[in-house]
Amino acid sequence: MKFSRIIANSGEWLSGDGPNRQIVVSSRVRLARNLSKKPFPGWAKKAERLEVVKLVKDAVEHLPEMSESYSENLETLSSLEKQVLVERHLISREHAAKGVGSAVVMNAPQSLSVMINEEDHLRMQAICCGLQLDKVYEMINRVDSELEEVLDFAFDSRLGYLTACPSNVGTGMRASAMLHLPGLVMSDQINKIINSVNKIGLAVRGLHGEGTEAMGNLFQVSNQTTLGEAEEEIIGRLNRVIEQIIEHEQNARALLAQRKPITLHDQVGRAYGLLSQAYSMSSKEALNLLSIIKLGIDLCVFPDAHRFPIDELFIETQPAHLQKGAQTQKMSSEERDALRATIIRAKLLQVPQPDIDRLKIPTSATNEKK
Amino acid sequence: MQCDVCQSKEATVFLTQIVDGKMQKVNLCEACSKEKGVNDPTGFALADLLLGFGASQEIEKSPAALKCGVCGFTQADFKKTGRLGCSHCYEVFAEGIEPMLKNMHKGTTHTGKAPVAYRAARVHGEKIKSLQANLSKAIESEEFELAANLRDQIKQVETELPK
Image (cartoon, rainbow over all chains, first blue to last red; front, side):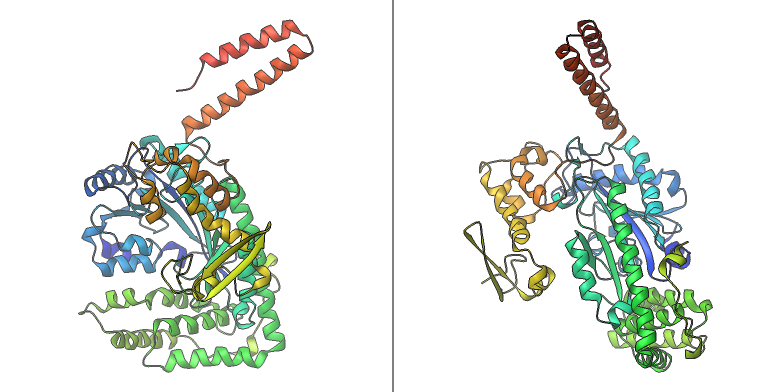
């Protein structure tokens, strides 16, 4: 499958449906695996890395899950194409920096992707929309079990799966959910939440993981530790915390609507005004304003039919996606800001003006879930 | 003075805490101090933080000239990168890695998924262990017939060792 074809459709996690979809954008589980006795990618020589790529890529391509897949060595991808994959959360920023001796394989719906020779020989992930970590783990666990039959994974009976960094040893698993929390941000409660989540051994990060800024009120919550607990226990713990955060977010939204309706209406109105009228917009500004529109859809101020087009803008207005769509010479950031504003204006034209009278607070998180 | 965490930026936050009568000092840059929650003194455990990097020094304590026989990785390389060279390094540097894992994780023993071959070995090991426990119980209560029986069972199971 060609890059242009795989990229033509947005991933399943964006267009699909799932429990608690309004607040939980996506659920993701990644597993780190290494081949026994072979130097880890960061220490291996080029020839050794190429040997691992050949071995692993062949095994991954033959998985039944990858019958329709996109598979490529990283040196054949332009930096723009790699950036597109980063913006879609299919490869990490670290992986995008690699070239010869690294590769990526993903399935057509973009729900499974395997990075070969990132920090570990294999970093495989499954991603799905809404809160369904159990399902996502099951998906990637199956892939792992299938690969285990043909690849000799480094495993120690006491330490579990061995990884390049000791912080991933054991399960080698990082489970995470991307949460949209405008209510907690607007009511200044987000730092309190982040601090308490950190205290119980879970990490909260920005849009693109470790060391990235939180934009568009999007936060990634994930497990910090990988040794001493079984996969199901880690996911269970994460699920319970996420459900609590969802409840806090719902409460924050309800409180905003009750106690600060003017602020809320003002924010939604301004976001709509700027997005539908601006002629230049940075990526950060766009994400932050789109987040407010997304909140507006959750609160019924905009018709629900516009949910997917708005969600799509979150990805389409990222720098590499814009450049890719433009199909011209490399744009300057001013040109990108202008193009971004144009794309957003065109889409906002379809969205009616906010109808504040329809504002409705979903009753409770638990009702929605069931 | 450099930040103890990122080792790149200038430290601007200085912390001193007395733990068990020993004074411990940490220097942090602004970004790292925020990340570690030092701006919120109530929610901040210096001990955790200290144990965190104590770990990287821990590894220096093991004999200096350790080198992995499979991939040639040395302790100096670990100090530089924070990563290991290959899966065998975990055996070579076990002594230094152990306390690090203790501080980093919830436990020191993997309890989750294992490849099929190991799962069989795990089940096998547990089977022998339980038989041996029964055997000692039988000996203690002087049920020698049962004990003999159990001993034969253990011998039998031991020969069925999975590959």
